[in-house]
Image (tube, rainbow, N blue to C red):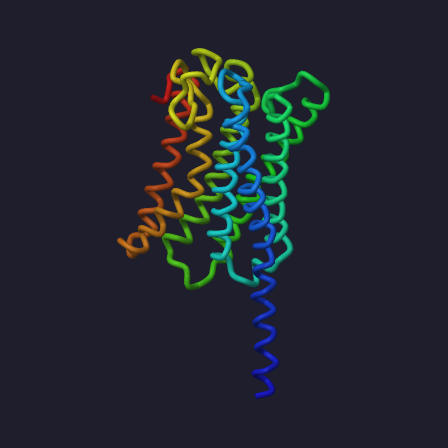
Length: 278
């Protein structure tokens, strides 16, 4: 009895430590949802435009993307063993993801409220510096996802299915790497100058419904979108493989990884050639 009573508190403490990362991610998710409300109201009331569309389109798109990313990390992080989740580096990665996501949306929303572009804006010294900081923050956000993906691959819980484990780990790792590559292509301005357009009209007017992708030329946001959402697609494929074909889950995920990389590569080439996605 004495030895059992001594062991149980330690087990509870280990589990509690392993879940401390959740607070930061939940707060970041809640912040994104809360700030999306005034952005949505402003979208309906504010008639100012940038690149031919509402100035609030970009904040709303980033709200949606960052909500999905924070929810994805909350969904996938518990795959990691509790003892590893309690470690300093894991918690630092989760905290960094939360902090940088909040910083990104704050600046984007601030610029929208000021009637100024948040991206590719070097008209003032402040905006030049802020855009550089935002770029560094975005890189740290993606690298934090990559670190959590590595933890999933190296320190998974033993009760997690093969497909889900591999899909989640490689989804975060490959999605992060491809996101960084496509983001660099977007931000560097080396392909047809600054901006996401390649050929066609340098305006978001008449873009593809919901996404806003150019329909008159190439758009580098297309491969960037597919790269980012590999983080959700591969874990879902892993879950499906565990349920429908558990003996072949590894093969299914390998094929899914190849398909994801192929889609990003094909849409990147398409965009660079100045061809619209649709």
